[in-house]
Amino acid sequence: MPWNRTVAVAALALLSLLLPVPAVMAQQAEVDRPAELRTGSCSSLGDLVMPLAHLVVSLGDPQGQASATPVEQSATVVPYTVTNLLAADHVVTVLKSPEQPEVMVACGVVGGTRNPDGTLAIGMLGVNDSGLSGIAYFTPNPGFDNTLITILLVTDGAATTGDSTSEPAAGS
Image (cartoon, rainbow, N blue to C red; front, side, top):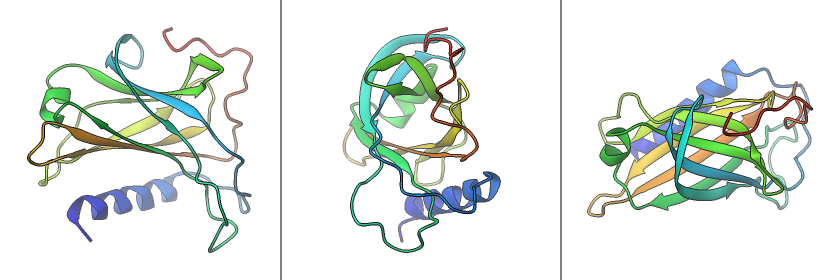
């Protein structure tokens, strides 16, 4: 297993130990959450750098244990190196749905210590009572000036998908 996959698996395993998960979770219905790469911080969003692939839960025939926690995921190749992204303030945001793009449900600040292979993992924290958290993983593409951004989110099971009536907008 390549080093960056080993780190991603280890990060998800650690994350799963930290999150309270109900004893039984049914496979979620289809999820469609827009994601974005932006300048700024989670508390003060800047300009849109580029949209990222929407987060989805893979549909199909569930296998393995029925109590497995569903993972919302996306992967997008962006035309920036990890070094470029670290040179200025950037965040990764996840929005509630295409119908509610003004409501942010998770945000992660791009920064931290890079792994020896150049990859970078950042924490994605839930906002607006979404109950979501996870990681965004930045994998450089050697020989090209681009990066694969993979976002993986899980719900803690205690919260809904952010249906609170007091949710602030993504830019607030």
